[in-house]
Image (cartoon, rainbow, N blue to C red; front, side):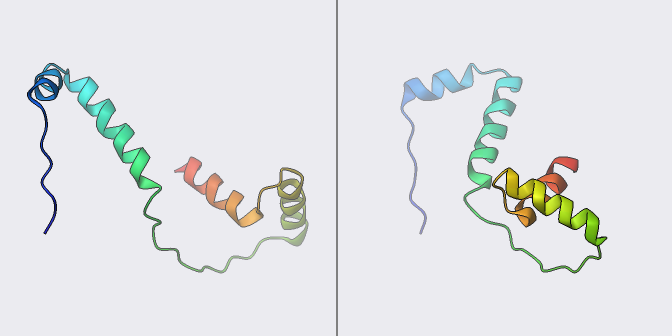
Length: 80
């Protein structure tokens, strides 16, 4: 059974005065805050990349102290 959360009257009144834009901003911030707590399932893939390109990418990641596979995921996420 999930616990029940109770809100003070003052809090409910303060929240009811929020604009739709403020509510959307709050919900987006909440989503971003909690989206990193539950790791989504990962899937192993195979991809062919020209060796010189991969070597240059790995070297640049090494200089930035970022694992190259992590950097690939960051680039994919930003692109989407």
